[in-house]
Image (cartoon, rainbow, N blue to C red; front, side):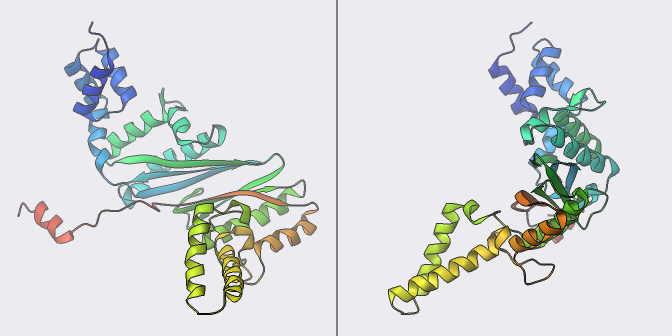
Length: 309
């Protein structure tokens, strides 16, 4: 039996494009025989899946799962919107959210988690799904929120099925008040988050580098007015406040009434809920945000399909 070295694993990965753990397993199963390992991976559909891994996967679904004081959200990507309507893909996305809910919350931990009744990990189940459906897919990101007391509420915008859609939101409300009323408030705040796209929960959470960049731009704009420096400083303060109102959840104007700050909405709701309410966190996943999609030349695609140059 040949020694299964790192170099041998690397060579197998380069030949097949399969994952490191799959390559190690293939070599172990074939007693270190490289060509046998290639065939083993092909039979399992792993090499075939790897060939698809270079394709851009910017479609898919965002899935959410909640259980009282905890909630999870996962983005699972595919190449086409058609796959998002596949029952097997939908079931996988929902199960991934449920497993994130009971796990650590990070993507790598999720991928390594045992997939129920499958005898393989979540990543291996996804690889099997790739081989079955024939498109590149990946678990892009995941998040989990929890509170010691209160609720974590989810909202899915334009859901295509319960817990599945293009935009998924979690919001965590810490309180000892009425749970049903907390859930109602949480749903409304989650809907606001879906629409308003805040970057930070509170002013203290604003990214310092982003704030400094914004401050520099606003300062230059204010100085361009030609006004004295003391006036410029006041102008800058006002513009920074406006910036906070755009990017900070608790400083934003509530989209449901168009006039009250979210912070005040939460304070007012606490009276009816029967205890103080604190928004401790939120997550907003919009499908495919930040992924660069290839611009296809449709005419060239048709010509290629017809065998033309």
